[in-house]
Length: 309
Image 1: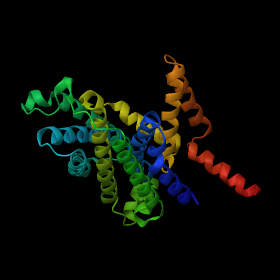
Image 2: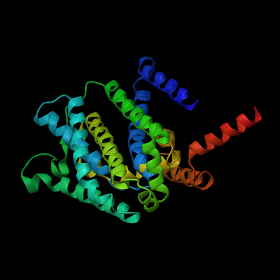
Image 3: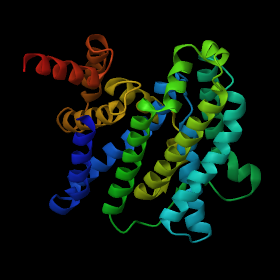
């Protein structure tokens, strides 16, 4: 039933740009972007139990590689973003091979340190290498895009792809292996599960989506700055959205991204100076009364409805 509702919603979203104005499309695009980012983080943290605090590395790599391919080689945007995803996969494979052997808090701290190192390297890249790429603290400007509909559909495809992957993981042998790792990685390894290989595959796949999303967001904004695209706040927002929606659930990141984006839009226009306090209170309240996220509330309501029907 849930899948049919999701397919119906996807059909509506595909037709949405036909009948609405630019503002709703912009808000929807922002929701899709964060849902794709949070969903990518959820694939590793929610299913394999590996808390990655450095996915913003691939967001920044995707942004700068996309910009470099467009500005230096004159490649089209979609080709550049796709190649940026490939570059991110190669780097993620090289980085993930040693770091994914770390367990628990060591992996989280290691990836957080990696993200900060990547930001500092990006800020100093042009000065150290004499190769113009990141623009230092000044950043890089991209040509203005033709319109907003292209970004709407690219972000929608990315969100749909990540959600479909999460749905597949929920019922596949690969997904069962990841959940076994999350429950007890040592016991899973003793049972014959190649825990390092499974986690690395998910890590590389999520890095690709994050990089393409970062490249798309950079071209959409037409300006890329290392301090922004490598900012830890992007990672933290991905984590918060996933936890709000429901960690380890296919639709949790989508629900969390939609909820946090819409509540920020609503409160931000009415309480310019105090809306962040209200958002913080809402996040704390949901964490206290619905630790399983908003999707757990929906599931509870559905079960009660079916029981009384």
